[in-house]
Image (cartoon, helix red, strand yellow):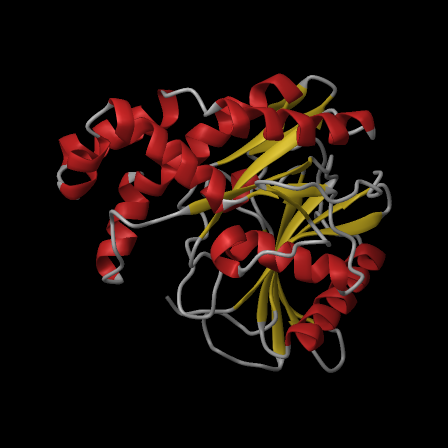
Length: 313
């Protein structure tokens, strides 16, 4: 992967070079930017900031009754109206041009398969986590990114996201979202790591969930991953639970495809597991506290796709 893409003005902020505030780029982009600046391996990409989202919303309000629908939330008809307007209304030309230029820089650097991920305000912070509630789209061609961004924006008002905001007493009509566009890592194995046991709260144990291919079936609950409990001090495996042999998502030249598990046995070979444990502890030290990490192993190395403080929210 070529990470030599430079910064760009306007609604685009490149990962590792972000100048804007958290309110401009959201939690996920800020975390990826921090990881890149710390020297961790992050897939190249950029953030389409909340200024682009605001411009899109303002353009819709000029021609449609979006303000009324937002005010009527959480009414179900209003929620469906908001999603339809946000996802189907064309992106303002200036935003679309900036997005097209940024995507063009990625593809010119050889990154032809892309991922679009949410980076909502308040997402992946210490007080709350919207993990899994907003859209992620994988294996996109350059020409598919703009529509995917609009669908990602609209997922702010998915049933799960609205319900979560209600439980947390967060506003339904003032939400904002940036979007991360990155090169898709063609993962041989995907892992989610907790450097504090998420059930027992033990700080001396690491919990790893891992499966072959991309991580989406694990995050969405379609597939059951391998589960390992690792002793931090010794690195020894204290518990191991084998995952299922069900559906996996793999990257192809044409995007992504769903297959049955292409192999048998543990997803993580011992040397790869040791590297992941070491990497996870490095991130925990850098973040100065327990973290929840998403990672992908490809081309004989680990890429970090996310790191966020562990929250009970």
